[in-house]
Length: 130
Image (cartoon, rainbow, N blue to C red; front, side, top):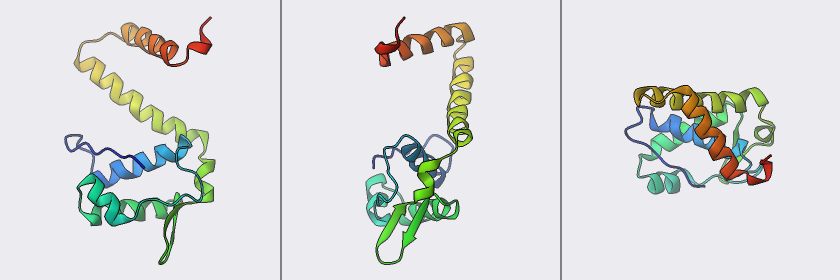
C-alpha cells in the first residue's frame, strides 16, 4: 500500500490517508478482505504520528470501508468493493476541481486544458484511438 502525504496540501494528514485508501479500493488496488498495514508500520512509512493513522483508520471503519478484527488487524470490508458510482464520481470531481483551480491560477484556458486531457487520454489508452 503506497500512500503519499503532502505536507503543503492544507488537507489534514488523516484525511489524505482516508482519501487515498478509498481511492485504492475504488481502483481495485486494495481488494475486499485484504489487510491494511498496521498503524505503527504505516505511521513509520509516512513519518507521521501513529495517532494520525489511527484516526484515519477509525474514520474508514466508521464509514464501513474497513473492518477491524481485534488482535488481527484492519481489513478492507466486503462492502467497500461495491463503492457506488456517485462516490467514484465525487472522488474524480474533487480532483477535477483542483485541476481547474490550478489551471486558472496559471492562466491556462479551458480549451487548452481539454485538449491536453484528450491527448493524455490517447497516450494512456492508445487502443481507443479513432
